[in-house]
Amino acid sequence: DIQMTQSPSSLSASVGDRVTITCRASQGISNYLAWFQQKPGKAPKSLIYTASSLQSGVPSKFSGSGSGTDFTLTISSLQPEDFATYYCQQYNSYPITFGQGTRLEIK
Amino acid sequence: QLQLQESGPGLVKPSETLSLTCTVSGGSISSSSYYWGWIRQPPGKGLEWIGSIYYSGSTYYNPSLKSRVTISVDTSKNQFSLNLSSVTAADTAVYYCARHATVTTYFAWFDPWGQGTLVTVSS
Image (cartoon, rainbow over all chains, first blue to last red; front, side):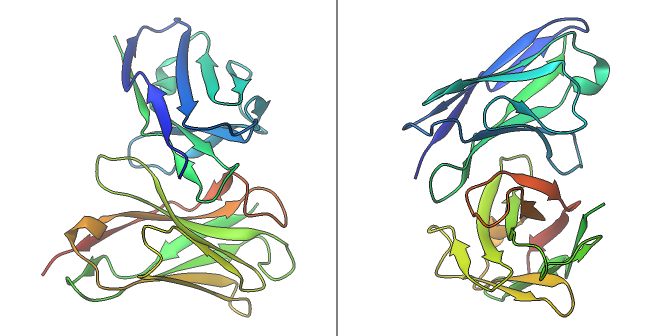
């Protein structure tokens, strides 16, 4: 299985900040990577697919980059509604696997 | 707008079989060439893919759960179902159903998702 490792596991930031979350794959996955946002008690919501494509309806403050083994999710100008847990998911290889999550908290 | 809704018992006894159904509305499982999947999330933990099924019935299962998982599809009811046998407390989780986002392939991200249902394994 491909292991997906996110860093940091948790992150404190202030409203207005720009933050970056990293996801590293244990082997190359081309650009077959997605990012999700999950708020407490809610299902994950797709933000980014194929590493850098924005899901329809997702604001452009979210951006993704990377290829191969190293990927990033950047969120600019943090607003209160952005504080949530973020997960990456690889879909290059069977079985599909997720990162362990990054909890973004208000400082 | 495509919507998915999980249903099933919220409490299952150890060693028994967990059974859940996902009902799809706003679109037809049989007329759309997508894979449909189950993902779970233990309380306070991360996401784990369980398995997926194509509208035709072909399946992929997570190797870590394969011996205990069966996923089936009922196109006449626009539903697909999960059976997980011989459950233990470690199977306590929120169970989500979701659609693979790209037609004809298992290799896709998940979108949209159902709201999730908590299943507790306890005597």
